[in-house]
Length: 164
Image (cartoon, rainbow, N blue to C red; front, top):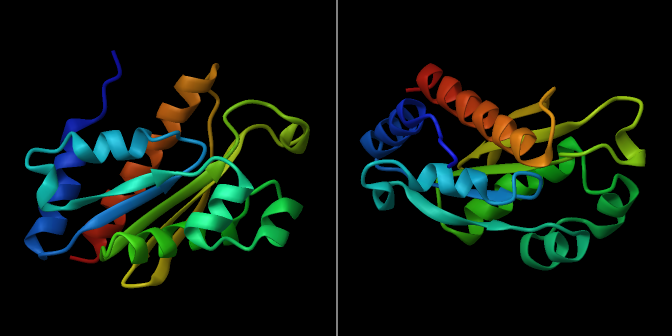
């Protein structure tokens, strides 16, 4: 059974609802776990608009206007891609906030030297306000995805608390 940090999720929801705003998520590496986490809040429909899991360059370009030339050059893992995911998902779902994340949950040739990592972005009203490179030392794809999800939620909460 997968467990998300309910306290963090409900604090995010409370801050966003108090402002009369909403959030949406575009995911790659976390495979929908952010969407599941946001939906776990009490009265989630008051703040969570929905999201999209876009795993490959074609789907990122088609649905969220990611530049396919750049995405192909970086295997879809960059600050630029994460930021664009956040902006475009907020537009598509008509939300005030957008979260975008892309990265590696297992070692592949592109990240052998550096280890697994992801880029996470948060946008607010169409502007990227956070972009962070995050990493995980967990073993196994799902534990890494859940670790990234937890880290993203924590960064979102910290930003929201600083900008109430």
